[in-house]
Length: 323
Image 1: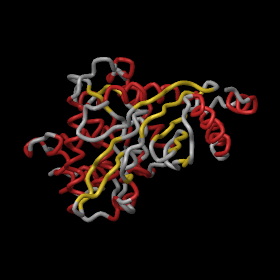
Image 2 (image 1 turned 180 degrees about the horizontal axis):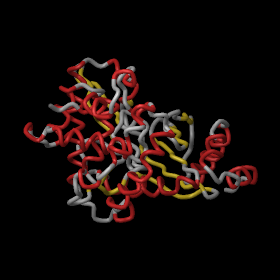
Image 3 (image 1 turned 90 degrees about the vertical axis):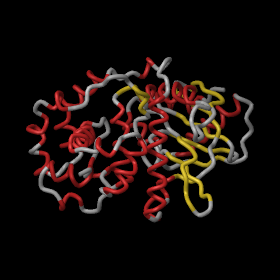
Image 4 (image 1 turned 180 degrees about the vertical axis):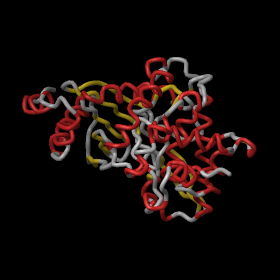
């Protein structure tokens, strides 16, 4: 069903900035979502907008979720769709069941099952060290699970790693400057990047990268007083590439410079103690600088870290201390 008012509004959105401005009026998206659900003969009792995420996500009737993407996020939609189908029933934790997908007035959407659990982001800081260790061990094993899957049928999301990382190297200085990396660190980046291609690990076999294993993408549930990972969501940034790239989110957002938690996570992923070396620390730090969404002021969750380091080497040791 086409709503002329919505059609005029949706067709006027051509950039991400325009989309962000439109997001302030949630009633527009409620109207669109209701019409989409009606087109699938889905009756709605209640819509609840999720505040997290870059796209429009509603839960309805506490059983399903609808995710609406602006046209500028077409690639995110395609990635999410492909990976949702690919992961179905293959992991030890739940992923959403895809029920419907389509396009409304040029805006693609997904309708999927709603997973049970609590978003890890909402309680991570309140967890004790023991429970954090449990979750990071589970997370390391889960990432290894995903990386062990076949990538057959995922060619459409192959980032062509060598091209991707060379692009990230080329734009690294400008990216870090745009995120207001402290000047004393920013000035060191050109020298740090000299010959970096030869120092980074070479890709042998591309694996499925979800893009961001962050506390915003996990659902946890409590059993006998301990929280455990039970669900994995959001695959809009997924691609095929170097395995180590997927280790960055947990290191920055969750481990927060805790050497014991870092060892627990990496060993659960599959590293042996003798592989936890200075070279691995350097590789993870370099990839963190080169990540497509690198923003260290937001992602390094160590209070006041900007005042604790004066060199990139000190920052590496603060976040990725393995020795």
